[in-house]
Amino acid sequence: MIYNSLGNKSEKNNLSTSLFHDKLLQSRAIIISGEINQLLVEKVMTQLLVLQEINNHPIKVFINSQGGHVESGDTLHDIFKFIKPEVFMIGTGWVASAGITLFLTAKKENRYSLPNTRFMIHQPLGGVQGRASDIEIETKEILKTRGRINRLISEATGHPIDKVAKDTDRNFWMGPEEARDYGIVGQIINHWNELKDSQ
Image 1: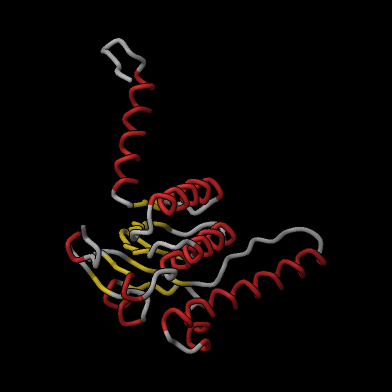
Image 2: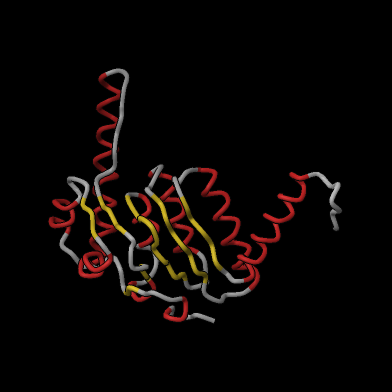
C-alpha cells in the first residue's frame, strides 16, 4: 500500500511502525521495555510463537525493565523455557525484579549485559488490604512466591538458597561486573558482533 502526501498521518505512522516491527522479527530480535504486564505478555508471546513457526534459529531478547506483575513475569519465564529456539538475553538500562526472572531463563553463556546496565533482585512486593483472613491468605501466597523466586535465582546462579534469601531481603543492586560475579550475567559486551550468534 502506498500513501501520498495527503494520506492520513496516523495511517502513515501505523505503516511505519508495522514495517519497523517486521524488520525486527526478520532479525529474530524482541524488545522487552518497561513494566511487565499482561499487554506486554501477549505481545511477546505472539512474537515468540511466530518466530518459532518460522524456524528454530536463536532469538535475541533485549530487556530494559523495572519489573512488574509477578504472574506476568512467570508467564513469560515459562514460555521462554517452553519454546524450541535458543534464547539470548541482552540486558540494557536496568533489569530488575520480575525482569530478572525473565533474564535468568537463558543459559548462563547466553546472558549478556551491555556495559552500563544495572541489575536488581529483591523479594516480591505486597500491598494487601481487606479482611484479616484475606490478608493472611495473601501473605502466605507472597511468602510462597518469594521462596519460589529465590529458588529460581539460586538454581540459575549456583548460590545457596540461604544466601539468595538474605540478598533479596532488600533491594540488592549490581553493576554488570557484580552481576557477572554473582552469576546472573554470563558476559559483558560492547558490540553486536560479540554475541555468540551475531549474524
